[in-house]
Length: 54
Image 1 (cartoon, helix red, strand yellow):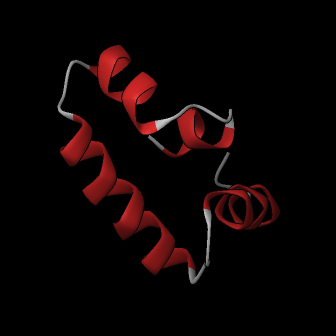
Image 2 (spheres, rainbow, N blue to C red):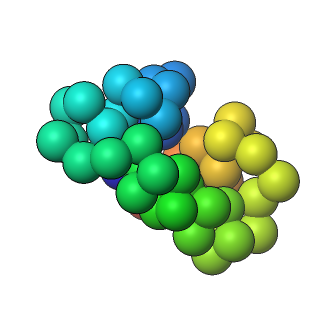
């Protein structure tokens, strides 16, 4: 999930690729942002790269 977000994919694109609902993706992205302490997707991607998560 985090990798797809870091690649710039939208919630809809991630949902289609993983065969899950857009709402489920939204929940996962929100959880990722909270766990990383990020305010947005771009910041989450940068933090994840800095922390070696990607």
